[in-house]
Length: 174
Image (cartoon, rainbow, N blue to C red):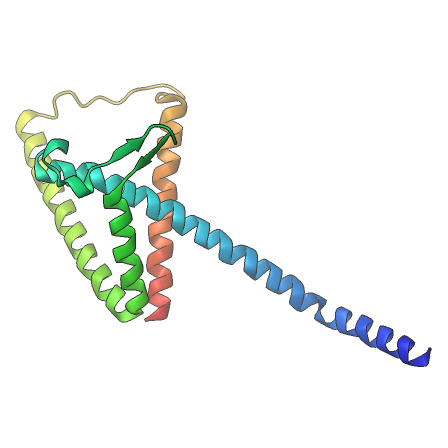
């Protein structure tokens, strides 16, 4: 009987001393899975948006190579996007290779993005000043764009946060 009491008291002391560790571990597990969900939503949305832009690059959906064309499985009610899947596999492989290589790729993509944005700003500014900004009017009122405008704005903020979060997380690793 004494051995059972001793082991029960020891187990109770073990639970009392490790309860803060278990709580911290549970919170860390929850945050880790929340980050995985965040990156999954952001990455899948970006990968899904690549196909229409790639189709425009090739000159239209009908000129896209057959293995990259989006198609619908009607009996399942889902759309299969091979281009998005290939992009996800490429990025996953790049991350598996290492942080240094993914940092180099991220630097190249960032430089290209900044160059494209500078080009759009310069070309748009030139065309805007040339034509006098014709057709550019802001709507007025309390909620001028309705619920769709609110959701579009919140999506922009969400994806901006995901981009900033991934850049800062990568910067910590390097």
